Image (tube, rainbow, N blue to C red; front, side, top):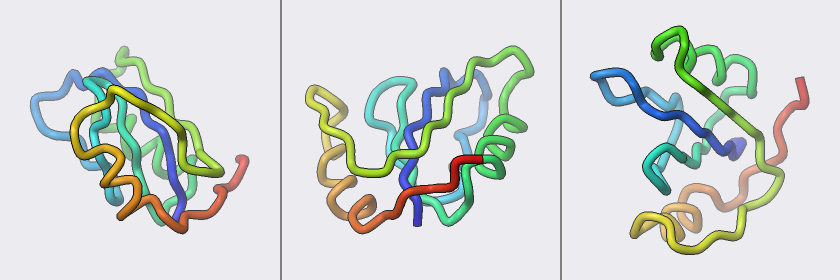
Length: 90
């Protein structure tokens, strides 16, 4: 499993399929634990959005430090983001 940081102002009417375990840590910011590599995950999320929607997907080699995020964010990270590995750099 790999850990990613996703910035995506959600413009679709449907909830995003994050293709893995995901948690919304802030309005437009998600943590995702996925078996997909970065490029396939990026494109699957991109295809769900309007063509002009901003999108950023970054692999994380370690759990990030943060505060002031949505309740449950740290708990999710400890349960779902623990033990993830660094992702490909493609």
